[in-house]
Length: 351
Image (cartoon, rainbow, N blue to C red):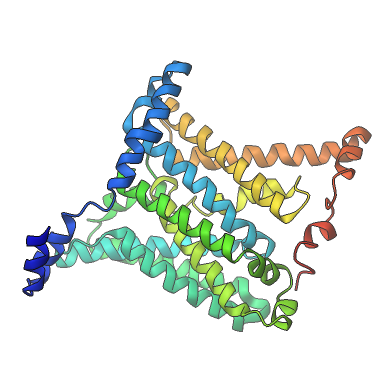
């Protein structure tokens, strides 16, 4: 290591410096966690349940990745849904597709070794800030601004794919539809890192984010930097979308920010409870979806989203049952904050 640092200090060429950095395995802690903690636990569970698939390393990576997605998706998505900005997740997913296409195009055209996830991160974050700026100035036409960015991002991606005579189309399929087989230790490491980062930021900024979501006017009166917190939320959304696209796929990744939250909203009694129930719904969908994907050989992303929609349908059924059966209705009425007013009491009136 000392020799490597000494060589770097002698102004190595850029390529040699990058090669030297690659010798440091920053994902070593994730590999250790997968082998000795999560993997060991999955091995024990495989023995108890008699399901050998839980012992396969790629399935263990897929399960851990899906569990991380199911955690950070609803955490961010709950704020977006209650802010009535659910469409922004789909917009950023499509621009992330353009970011992946940019990375693959540059690698193909200029013989570079850029990570498509890196270019997707850059494009998605820049787009997130642009979208927030457009929404601020578009007023009642914010959905139009989102639609323009969404279609524009997908159009740019399709142009870059065809610009190389379809040469990068094969490489982009995994990002479009997701794949269990392509989930690497690095992908899992990114998701774990994003889970820690997103969870920490939302925990630290929970109260300001809540006020900005439900009552931006009161938040401004309280001298909160509303613009800063709105931009923080869209940037977090971009990070979640790009982190999750490898297993869920660009086309379906937005669903994990919206569907579990919509299911939780049917039965939640408060904003915090809505977040918790959305996470539980997403975790169930993630486990069920990955399992079904392996058993039946179907797409992991589609399986997870369909499972989440099934949870939403059950929640709708429970809500309908509550209106029909007096006993269920009394049970719901005994829980505080079930009404829209009670839910918004955590953060005031919606702006």
